[in-house]
Image 1 (cartoon, chains in turn yellow, blue):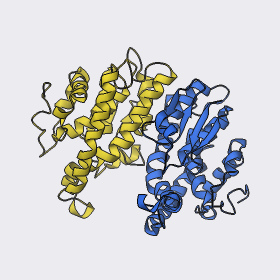
Image 2 (tube, one colour):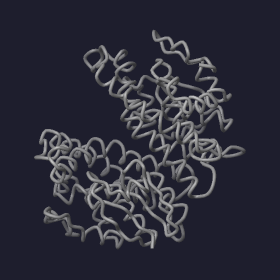
Image 3 (cartoon, chains in turn green, brown):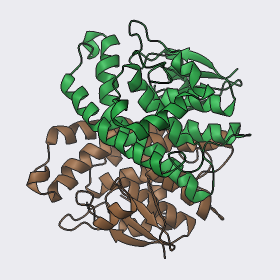
Image 4 (spheres, chains in turn yellow, orange):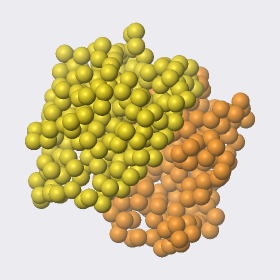
Length: 227
Length: 227
């Protein structure tokens, strides 16, 4: 069975788990710690970044956009996650890229680095208590992004158009990693919340709701479909 | 004719100009200043980022990976810039993503922000003289990346494999923006230099060699094919 090297709260790894589940293409999970990548991970991806998919023949695919497109090209049977004509596909990729660069840089990276990664890192590598100014700034920008997602969800069936796509999975993966630590103010953003609720109820999401990080229990509402 | 909103020394804009030239699909260029995006740019791309392609029918495509894939899907005639089977295409996209995230964050962003963008920005927006510690750190990391590119170029015909691809254009665009200000130590990295020389000699590169930024003449070797 193909193997996915991942970390539970890494938004890019979570998106690949969601995508593999939506495609109906199972993979064995191999836990990695982004702050201490295994020798195995470096062997498959010189950059040492997650996620990496290792196929049955030993070939490895890494780079989050490369892997997304690769799955679409190799697992695309009944399900396409980049559906439609060239313009529709461009919209899926634009939003996916927006989550992966802007949302990640402004929200997911500071919040997750400070509240998760630095907790596990050795002090000499930068571990320690969170820098709360970075967290607060990230959570402040999160509100503008919840508003944008809500406006998209109000005008369309799914974020990029009529069909569920990689853009929904990318967004859901980023939000759910932050939701694990209970930091998404869903109550103030009903449109974004309704969109996330639909995603959270999909069978592809179930394994993510069972996640747990050692010494860091999930927030009370994380597994609740009626949060 | 389609219109590309771009900035001369923006590596992502440069890659799109190279790609459009390689596909043989001309576009009119509309100059933008990344530090002061036009109202027009925001109308076509809510994120205000470059590049943006506006098609003859008025539809706009933005997001650098989205636009790359869109051009491949709509301009792919005699030329493919993401060639080969799914594994070969994943390698093209992995390297393209590597340049766009790692190389950009570590080298292109600090060097270009400090030495170009801050020169044009009003002081109240953060303009002023370059923070030389950021520049020096970027130029130091540039060496490791020139070494990696040289090793790839030694083992393969082009960076991602047998054929010229988007990965070569992505790399060339990042390097050439820094080359404009004369900061690439080519002499110390003969393999990377030989690869860049082949790219620089292509007809698709010619318009970029004619670029000039107001008040900032190109380095002496920028237009020289035997630099």
